[in-house]
Image (cartoon, rainbow, N blue to C red; front, side, top):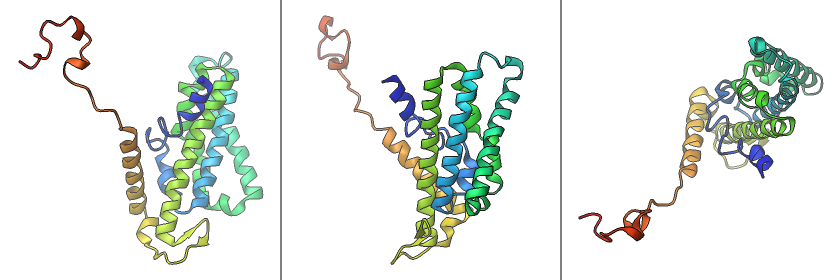
Length: 218
């Protein structure tokens, strides 16, 4: 059950984008098309999982005095690898993501999970933490990019959607801020659903011994 919690916490409850507000640069910059969103999300997930594995395995070897530079070197190695793969097999996506692909190296999500989780936990929890956070990031980017592409361009994954009147505003920076704000507000609203708080004697821990039952408000 603990492993399941590590995997699912990043999807909604601790979503790095919609709750933690991390990785805002790629979130706003490349989410003009759904393919860009899912591409950036999966690339980040790969780096996040691999770096969590490496850092978890090396946590007792890396000196504390140089741990941050070591983390960046490890992350940069995996970013270079995924860049080479994309450039060779997905050149169009590689060109679309541009410099934001390289900036995965200093993405707050990856560095944050390395510092807060991977360096303090065993291998399996670290893998699940990276996978969950990465999938949460991917879902956030894909959702936001889909909304912007459908409304702003009248397409989804490049496929023309009939009867949709495009609104260019949504693929501009202002549209990105607006869509992100709406999604965050919706997530906060859904996460804030709590049962109504009980008041009166029935909610009091000392109700059975109370000499003034029913008269707490007097």
